[in-house]
Length: 311
Image 1 (spheres, rainbow, N blue to C red):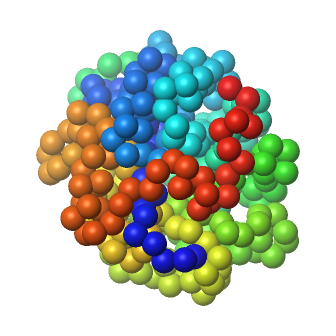
Image 2: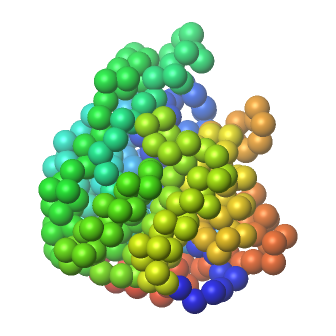
């Protein structure tokens, strides 16, 4: 795509990886999700990537009614693009994972581009006591999880949300094979370029958090998609900021947020999503780049506009 000094900052507000015990800053209730989303937008996030959680105990929820407890408030309070997950959690069916997006018709959705082991269980060893009784087993049982995203699943998401609602996808690629899966789907006519790639590093089961792998994934994307794509990077845990910084230097966009990392620096928990957004924005400024506005992101990615959502 055309070279620009504008960088899209996405912020993944809560996700389904981290559990409430891990950080008091992790937003759980609709009010917390809305407040942190609005603050992240004000800090410079052009895109807000959103999951829902059960307000009673913080477990991941696919319920459209829970999404509706925070989405309208966010839309009314800021202009950022709202990007709803279709990944949900590995414990959910595909129908559960797309239920909210199918009802609410957002501008963007995430879409995982391949099945994989999705292992969270090493995190359980760090904690002796838990805020809620579901957390420990949710993490420990992930040594048996396969996150299913078959070609049939991917086509179903595209037909339902892409064709059905004009949704643009954030194609989440956890390994190089996922890039080839996307290229195959484009060859079949399932997605229209330019596509928006989210290159993901550091999830156990996906490609490792080595900076050489970032270069490898970028070169692979260049080979498969030519100039007809935008790309962004996220990295889990302590790798978040260095991977995002390198991505911007290579012409990419970035994703931060408490879904991906609970920290703001070595050994220091982030106070909020906005704190991470502000940090990566400062880094961009020092590198001579600017955070793209929500409207600039909409133009770059070819989104349908906030006036065409159903919330």
